[in-house]
Image 1 (cartoon, one colour):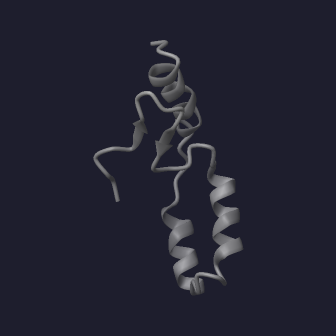
Image 2 (cartoon, rainbow, N blue to C red; image 1 turned 90 degrees about the vertical axis):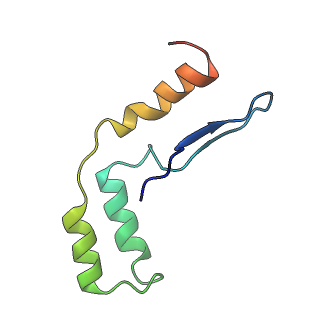
Length: 76
């Protein structure tokens, strides 16, 4: 589900927030899916469905650096 705002800067504060995890690649997401499956009581069918719809997003690894350069360091 998408939200209108995905990242925030708090002017005058050394605080920034993101609504996603740009540091996670597909392997890391799959690892977490398996790791937390029991805790979240995911059925094998639910796990398989999540695996099926997961897609690589190589651009995600550039988002945090671009966010920091644009909004924190003021480098565009």
